[in-house]
Image 1 (cartoon, rainbow, N blue to C red):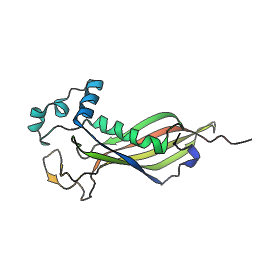
Image 2: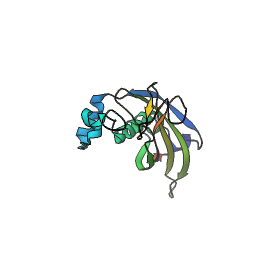
Image 3: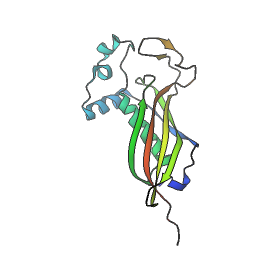
Image 4: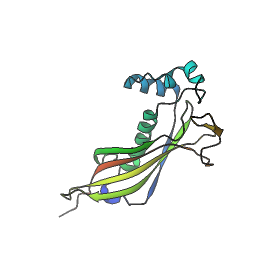
Length: 170
């Protein structure tokens, strides 16, 4: 168990998650198949060639799900009761097959439950593309990134989890 208990989260701290993942065509295809999402922008190369992106996009829900998975060892592995919500989800830049992502989580809020038995922790999760591939937005505008940063932001959201508290000797 590598996750943190409620008391170990500090509001304002940013957790850099070391594990990264390069997303393959197979990853995207399997996710789309499992979720029955047959959007041609994700699966049909000929269709995607005619879009502003010029190629297939990785399913945004896969990017988000993968990001959550990459955060688990450093945040809630074995210490979570439940995920309560995912809010304010945005995908400001596309992800393509072969892109590698990294994730960081910033603790934005924490509070004890009304019975004091557990804690609620909210983290702002940011997902960045780490390879040097140029970014093309929905209008087909290409640049090194959307904001001049070396690693463009490709997804962000708020995750709220119900967390175990440490057992204290009485």
